[in-house]
Amino acid sequence: MNNYFFLHTPHFTKIPGRVPLSEFSTLDSAIEEKTYYIVRTGGGTLKVLVCDDDAKNRSLLKEALNLLKCQAIEAANGADGIALTKQEKPDIILMDHTMPDMMGYEAIKEIRKEPGFENIPFVMITGDFEVQALVEQDKLEHCAFLPKPYGIDQLTATMELALGKPLPP
Image 1 (cartoon, one colour):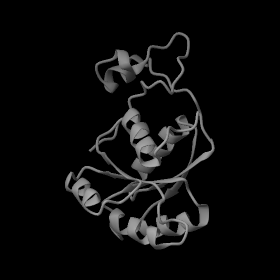
Image 2 (tube, rainbow, N blue to C red):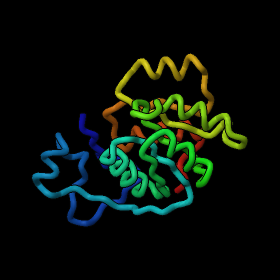
Image 3 (cartoon, rainbow, N blue to C red):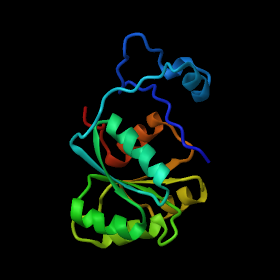
Image 4 (cartoon, rainbow, N blue to C red):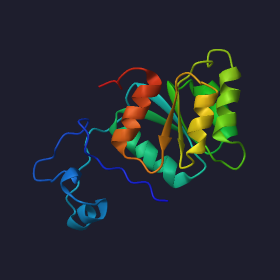
């Protein structure tokens, strides 16, 4: 399944002479016309851990987070995610649910056992809708669900939901 980020949120500024993606029927037609724009580069104050075994997904998320002025840290599996959480102390974690070494849900539980990380906000990213029921069943606070495929506007809204506040400007 491909992940596409449609860049048509209020977080972006237009570049003169470019047409926003929102005016195209599909991302492919925008790419064919070479009239898409990307603005607002990152390295901001919000530190986000991206935990996903798929390098392409991590790269896409890192790019999106850069556009949202967030500092992205990458982990390729659940165990690395746990270690990097302790080391980097992120503000929020974007966690893929299905990974080979450890399921994202298991990594969340392990991280939440650590002192100081009991309520760290999470966004569980998955194409499996049964995961949402699992997250809701355990009533994990500060944990939101983001179904695949998604756009940058859904990513932003879901991160804000998990954080309980808007992303920093």
